[in-house]
Image 1: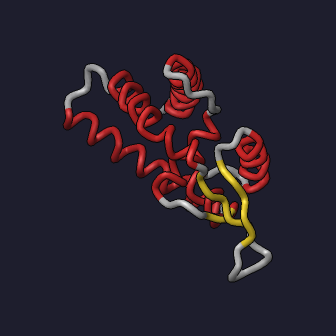
Image 2: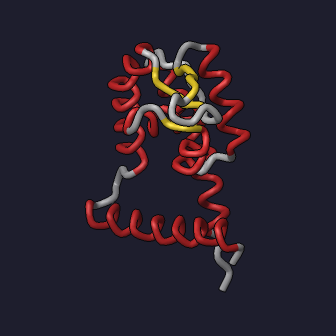
Image 3: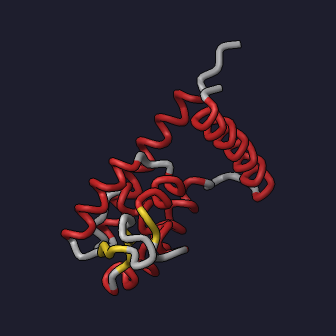
Length: 146
């Protein structure tokens, strides 16, 4: 069976990233895709460690650290030492980052509308169930090597 699902997923991801970044810029939000992923996680739960952000975004810890550095320089997040565990750094949203949330979510809704144009609600649900299965398999493989 000749399947091209992985190839299509890669193409979709590349196009989606470019379109999403264009929509962000059109709405006055100058952040990269990785920064957006980190913000999305922090908007749900503020004050996380690099490890927690890495786990929830599926970005490597060193990638998260580099992206966080850029975000600190732009005034989007700040780093603080965890008073309970001085070896841990806590990443927190700034007021500026909090002010971006509504506009960012509006752009996300625009992207979702484009992504699912022509899909019925049932088709969308089925598609997302398949994606969850693929994600679970890949996540399991990352942890077990199988």
